[in-house]
Image (cartoon, rainbow over all chains, first blue to last red; front, side, top):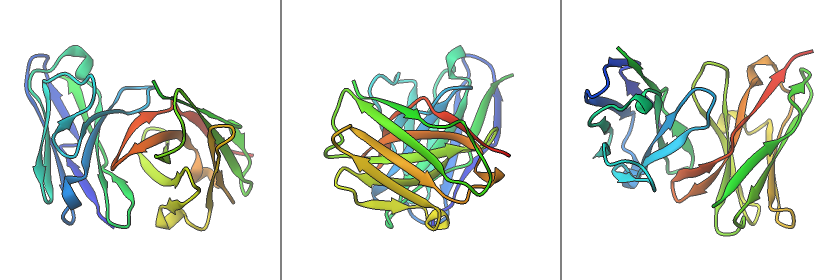
Length: 109
Length: 116
């Protein structure tokens, strides 16, 4: 079973700054089946990125995903006030099963 | 626009069975897999399993002995049963639609507390 490790645990930034979130897998993620979600307090997660680099419908282009194999990155180019939230990566494995990372909280500095 | 809504008891006693239903509107169960995910208070997301419209299932290995999922195509619903629950099963339970390898539509979630 793949383990996804997200870093950092918490990212303290100001609006307008760039956020770089990492998701590292314990083994290679097949076919870049890696997704990113945003979750705000009291809300369900929202799909941001799928297949490592494709933005979901309605997601602003300040969100971008990249990576392959075991290392994946979510970048928020310029943080807006509504972007402060928790972000999770998720992989779809060969079993096939789904695994989530532990999350990165992006908080206002 | 597909919408999902979880329903079921908010309180379950230890050792009893947790039962939840997810009602899908704005789309059919066909051609997709449907997942359950949970989130203990203040913690991260845990995938529980998924079921296809035909009833094929895949569960997280550590939960296999506790979990049963089913689908009711006539009602456009799918369900989760989790047996022998303990306090560790207290969580917000989400249902979601799987599109390919990711979850593109989620319910709002329902809190289930395990307590006597």
